[in-house]
Image 1: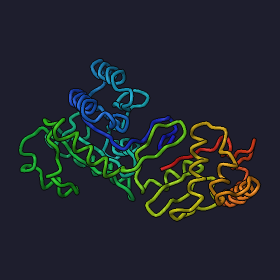
Image 2: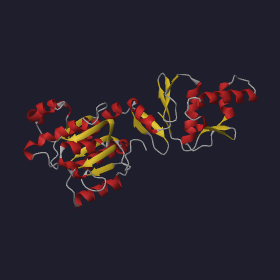
Image 3: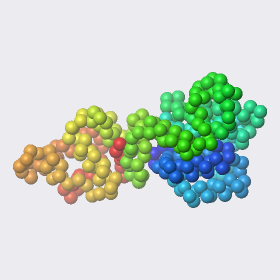
Image 4: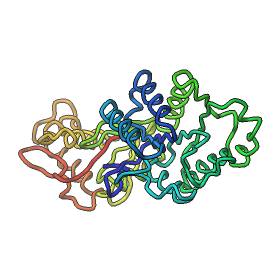
Amino acid sequence: MLWADEAGRTRRPIVAIDDHLYHTGELLTALATTAPDLLSEITVCALDRPGPDTDAAVGEWTARYPQVQVVTLAGPAGLGAAGDDYGSCAREIARLVRPGGIVLQDIQLETLAFIPADRWWESIYLGAAIRGFFPQRPPVVRFCSNKRGYDATFGKDLLDAGFDPRDVMDKTQVTRVVVPGLQRLFAAQFPRSLRGAGTSSVSVSDMDRADVERQCDVVLWRTTAGASLGGRALGSTATLKAGALEIQTWQQLIDDLLAGGDGVPVIEIGARLAETGAERAEQTNLAARHLHSLRSRLRDSDAIVTAHHRYRLRDGLTAAIV
């Protein structure tokens, strides 16, 4: 599974952090109503104090929104002692968000013991600390608040921490302001779609390519100029120009693997390569030479199997198309 840790917890494009169950539930309801596609893209960190109310709320969210990943302070998958200081808390939350993702954080997190009650605005430094764990692709951090006049009281603190006070979202307008804001950010940060084995479509950015190629054996990454072919099974990443005959063949092989098919017919590939009216033997020879070229890109040429007059990627390989 892409972006999953050893415990099976997946990094997601959006992480929302709040210390009140009511506000987390309100966000999930608004997403389910106006942007249901984002439910499978979000992890909510419900930082309300552990207890029966938190357990009941999490149980309700899990039943109503099974696509959502829920993290609390307690439990085997919780943040645990991460609430003891900025560094450990930021590290644990950073493990939940994809590089280049989105962190939506309430501007006041009362349940974090290391933030003094009389200096509640210092919650903003948690967002800054989270970004620090991503030296190359820090997440976009957006704050939301239901307080009035926050910019007059600590706008300078926001600026000093690297945030624009004008980006703070009005928490009283979840449906009209917060959700549309998340939709715009998500579309900008993850504009492309990846198909892989055993998964629904995964939203990605072109900057995710290296991560995907480290986790998959064969990846066909389509571009306006053609495509790139990479992954663990490749000897090196290959750049394929638009119109290259390889692009369609690789796509056929990957589509067949993802669909659990029995291979792409040799004659089908040969007919595409040959001129109109070519004999079957010529088509078969053209297909064989063409597949020899594809195999030469692989560390192990046996990764493409020929069986029953069909070509297919070997069982056990992982593949994806963007």
